[in-house]
Length: 192
Image 1 (spheres, one colour):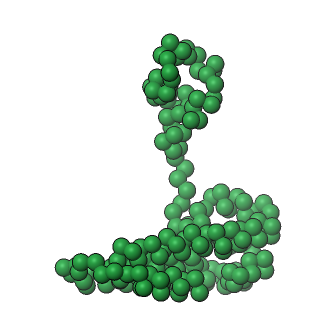
Image 2 (cartoon, rainbow, N blue to C red; image 1 turned 135 degrees about the vertical axis):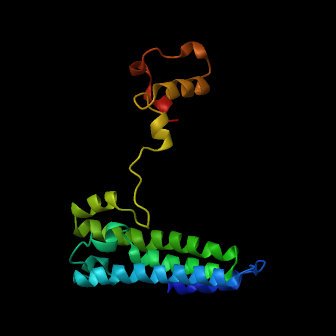
Image 3 (tube, rainbow, N blue to C red; image 1 turned 180 degrees about the horizontal axis):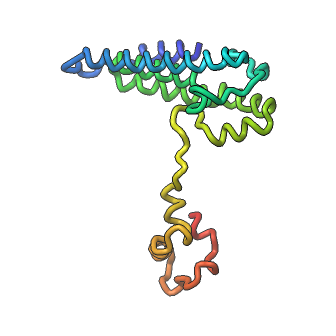
């Protein structure tokens, strides 16, 4: 239902952008995105059916098994990812910058009003398994990046003392207070 509402809103707010020189490329891209979305959503539904657990997103508390294989190794919500790809395909088909807000609205709405309640129910059902799965797999399509972030790489003395020295010099009011021993450095300076 949310998908349909968002798709209609995208169509109503779509303003024609300048036509592309090759509209067949736009249609081909939209078809490829739509087919990918359908494939991901169907793979998610089939994985749940094979495990003989519920596919009803309105009753996650009736789940009998936590499915972590197949497409669920890559995303916790393949059916929502598939629906989002359908909306992206529709935006490409409409060829409107305004229509690109549709998938964004869909992601925010589904994350807040559908995924969070589902995750609470699954955490209650699968006490130790679901939090570990949640830490390992992203809710949408991309896997978590195991590499340290920019802030983690350059804000701790253990990671890169030279960069921390530069950071200290840039953030400090006076250069005379530069620490000579990192263990004496207050941690709060590195978290700013």
